[in-house]
Image (cartoon, rainbow, N blue to C red; front, side, top):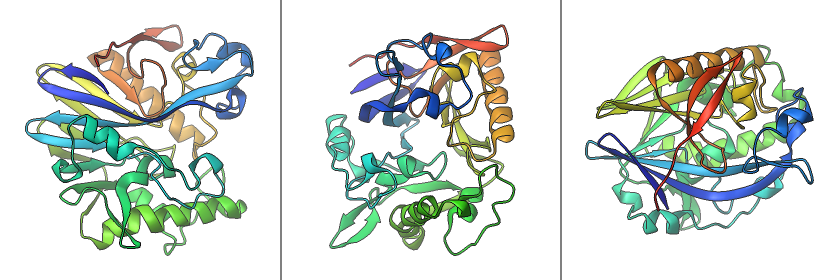
Length: 304
């Protein structure tokens, strides 16, 4: 476990997996390979050109609240279109226990968006069915993503740069994710759909930052005069700090994603917020400073 104190709050990093994911040039299309060589050894393997990332969850303890931010991939999932997620077995609940966190202690869950690697541990199998992992928690789910990913909604994807209907395997996996990781939370009456901005506790504010998905969002934390922003998949790699107009291959609306990224990064630089993305390996979080047309990270230090 890695921890950091931010004012009176404690942030705990729970790493479900870390390592080589895919060719770096595939993760951020259009970015020259030479840019990746400046990403650093924690984020890029120059031997095989692979992107190094992490699947991780952040737990925030503040004001008597226990907040889980994004819930990883989950176990026992049908994810044939993503082999590394398919029928996965991990130690997520054991890692939470090692941090002193029981599922019943969690009162708030935030899914920054509803992709498979951010909602997996929303649920777990019990007596052959999917039930909420955190039985006493309110799950804050972006309303725009609920509408977009709901298999019954038949959303028009024409506003995105990549129509999911053109990729049946992708759509089928999205439907499966909704079925096993979202629908059980809705059925249990634990979901709190939201849009715009929402205050979910003292010093905890959700804010929309669309583009990666229609409902992509950030969680802002302020405590004791210090600030952090959990940015989900606005950033996949530090190369996007130097080149903030560049999107990951997973962004559905590229222009909107780039605009959201720039807005959030400029605010983080202005307000001294600690930027905490979902998938950064290595230190995982950084303060950012403007440099040229982009930003430079000042990496944070965690304690064990």
